[in-house]
Length: 140
Image (cartoon, rainbow, N blue to C red):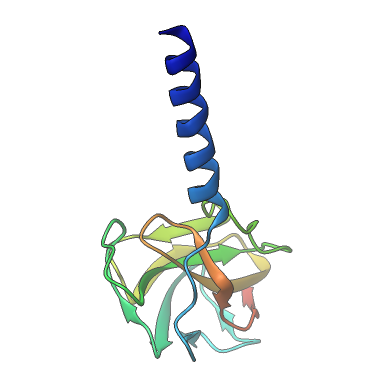
């Protein structure tokens, strides 16, 4: 019985690792972009950031419909989140798991970078990652 339980536990662990290691393939031609503000814009501390997608549909987190995802706004992030792990959820990685197409964001005065990354139903980056150009805004 112990051997069976050990083998079952090992099988479960290996299956879990294989699920984590396989990223959702990015839909062909999928793109994400920041519509506004524009790169280099001077903005107030609270600014509406508008998102857009092409060749991919938006769906809430948890929705496993093929070729869908939802936005994550990366604020002042130098490196993209690691492949094979969920996109972090913190002040620099904001999740929009209800398939929102815009967000009101409050930033401190100064220069900030903004970038979008589309995540799959489990907040995982696609393979290859679907990311926008990084823009810089000046907050007054």
